Image (tube, rainbow, N blue to C red; front, side, top):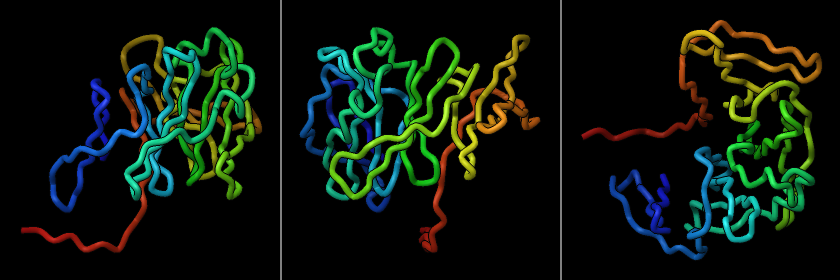
Length: 202
């Protein structure tokens, strides 16, 4: 677990020791506002952030092996138009990240009620590229909470009456939204990997 404080300090929680410890910050985050969501892929944690000085979106990473921070890619170049110079890019809430299997996904607005889904391609190079998978119509970026293994987006749709929402699945081919019959509030989806690891209890 990694925690970045408001004073631009980073701490790592290690399960073996059960304690927090400070790590060196080789990148300055004083002018950066982080999105609440984060994605972990191949031992690397990704965050989407907005820089108040450059007025650009940033895709930062933390390598759990080397314990170093860095910028994954100049996302304003690889994802065109809405992330490049658009005044609406100043609202970080209009963008989000997720993942499909072990690939990073960036969600960007496309008009008033549409959302583009971009997937990062590593291709063995230092500067990855992005490809657009599809465009979701009549949805909010903030309603996206994850993806199924078949790449279908899962959304938290709030009802107009009452406080309960319903989990829904968007089908890119038919552009239909189907309810799953699962109701509640503040849904969250996280991925996991099964390991044959023995836990020692004292």
